[in-house]
Length: 485
Image (cartoon, rainbow, N blue to C red; front, side, top):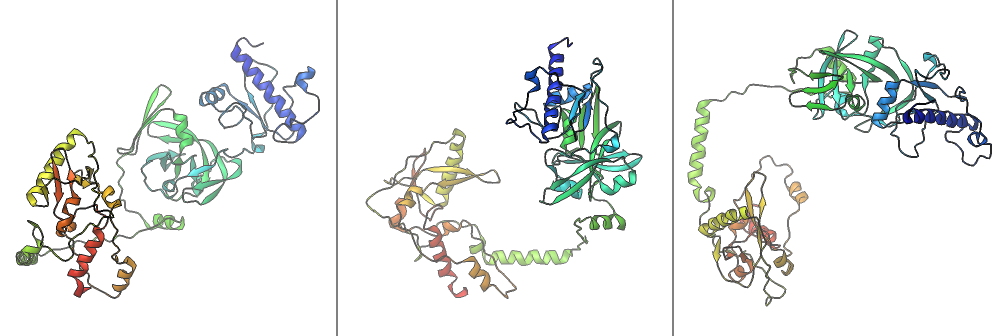
């Protein structure tokens, strides 16, 4: 008789498992058929025989420690799946919980050599880093020993299960457990067949020995891969991938594993290279040569560059003042010239006010903008660059919506590449603030007006953000470099 509610629940669960397995054995189906009209043993008052073994099923016994571990992880007692209300096991064997206080309910186990264990329920996965032995952002290489043989263990939380090199397992002569063949999906989409399993293989690290269930795979780089299957059983784990230190608790002892001072560059022999090549790994040859520079030649080049900069100072120097007027001065034709585009300014953070003030003053000093009172107004905002500085932007979306679009042809990249066929030397020109090298037409200057918390301003040069600006810039380039195109 059970003494506590917990013991009563355990006894009821075991009886129910036997009853379900008995039904499955008689019906020869994986799930109980609700359409059967036969007598129900529970309703007829017949007590199920706990020693009855269903036909074709395998009996396993769970120790109290195993029951406790599965309960803490929320797993089903009969399979490795998560237990939820209405859960039905897919496996066709019976699980019995070993209870030292209960006598007469033990069932003899089948001989170990006759047991064929099913593969993992969920799809097994292994990362490309684990297959090729490449150090990745979520991996850690640890030295260890398996049966007095030094091995390289790769801890990888991108792999679902634990794996061992198939050739190494044969050399170590590990006891094999027969399993139903299953597929392991590699991160590149390839699928590998796994037919061997090794239960509770002792892996000795420096200062601690752990046991793990391993599956045989044709690994190329590491000897052993410990994945999520092993990490979940450790509980709370602290990992520092930068220093290569991993810490967890094993009972009352805190275990620290370190990858040591492993160098990324090592001298390898021909056998190691051949092993990687035959395993499908990629090999890169890098030739490092020492370059010699002649001091005299470098000084001569500096002198030539200095003379070139002085000769073309007007072109290569920082532009000061406004560019001249050209035939390609930018114009902004509106659908309705009598309607002024006005958008209220945006709200921005207080710390951005100083940045806006500083950039406005800089543009005023360089002559790119000027104070003005205009019925047009567009809001401004700051966009952060990759280097952390701020880019001053004017939002011309409302103005662009009311602008008549230009249709000047823009060259195609494919056509330009075809024209470069057979060329050996290429020149590249990079204009400093290229749009600011083009003036605005005098009648269209008020349309570019923008407003800040300090006042009203308008551009004297073509600003960024106008819809027809790329066409005007291309027209300017065609006009200037016409004879060279």
